[in-house]
Image (spheres, rainbow, N blue to C red):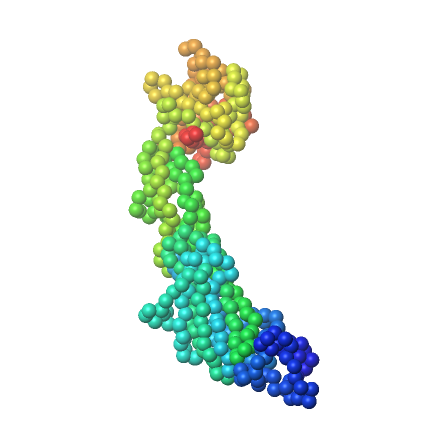
Length: 437
């Protein structure tokens, strides 16, 4: 026995005092130490002091060795379509008979670990794991753990099928959650006990379902949707369903604008994740949303939105002579306006939320806010909305005083000759978004 071997063994008598060996027999005693301890006939106890081994999860001392193979394969990403993983784990003994304890659990007793079930059952040494465990095989939460114990003859092996699984509700409610599954292996022979060797395997939940479906913008005739992508790599596209009818079937992006809708009408949407074979994998949350009233509706405040996505605004405070500019849309009252129709319902005063001032166009100057004019001069404060197509929510805003002039957005609003080409230049296009807060 080498000097290193001598340092790894600590001999104690049952009374706790160092064992005394007759000097004439010390060489024989040391040479016989392994035999006496393994046979369990001596009074000495020796404990392994070697560090835990590498990820082959072996426990050994001298000629006593038990190794495992297969636990790493339990690393998995659960999805709503993959709720279970089953892998074989093989324990193999060395040249000395030994007993073993094999515990399957998790590094931390998290809520997710409490939702993962673990089962194990033995199979033939060269067998493969069936999809389902034998009838009556008990399961336990991975957070609690499951211990397998047994004895192995010299050079013998035992093979287990280990299955971990989650419920479908867990896949839906614990997306992006992870845990570290853990195998603990310990061997015993006579009075010898090995340190525990550890191997880990990562498990997580990905989601096949699109998530967080929401409406990010709506008009009287359109609804713009967005959602979070499914995490499952088998998802190749999305289908958009409205009121039980598919309206888009090759949607690769996570946004969609549904057009041609009826004003002031409630619609219900679902997004389905679809694989390469056209299978519906999972559905998003259901979203109910209503289109706006046909603009401009009386008593409704609007943001006047440019094609660039900015809003018409009268920098605070709104006051007479204040020039109308374009800036980032906000909830500020200075960007809220209502459209008050004349008795024919075709011409509008555009009224600011503060001070009851109205849009006023004076020649080529930037539009400004003014008090309402008398009947003789009202035309400069009257505008019509010309949709770019039938039912469209996008308009040119034309001057009543000179119907060849349209509002044009830039840093400020000005009157310019109306563009009648197709497509109309974007800086003459506006939409009206209802203010909801």
